[in-house]
Amino acid sequence: MSKYLFAAHFWETTSVIPSPPEAVIVSVDGAPARVFTAEHLAAVALRTGCARDKARLLQFVESDAIDMTRFLAILTRHGLLDRWDVFERTLLRGGS
Image (tube, rainbow, N blue to C red; front, side, top):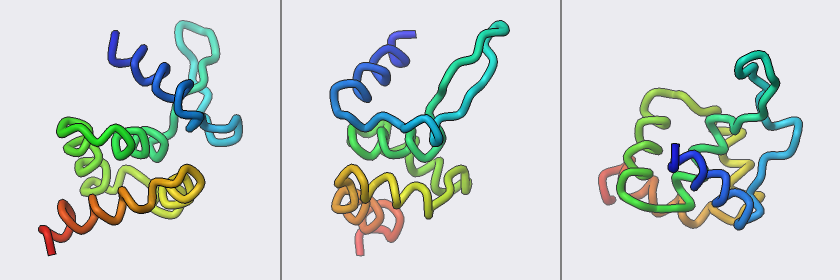
């Protein structure tokens, strides 16, 4: 459970909170709850930069779990394109 609290705290402190149209509403025990999209979770993983999150981001990309157009728009909005370029160069293209 603590990793979920950390994620919520991370979003609050970095102002990278999905706006209402980008959040997904799901039912949790009959109550509506807003959750992050896969693209926002991938952006968090890129932002944190720890090894486990890089592995998760790689899984998201390799399994086509994220819409790259939406993901790149989120990265652009939050100034993360440079980090994406490094990630892409080192982990997706094998360091070239």
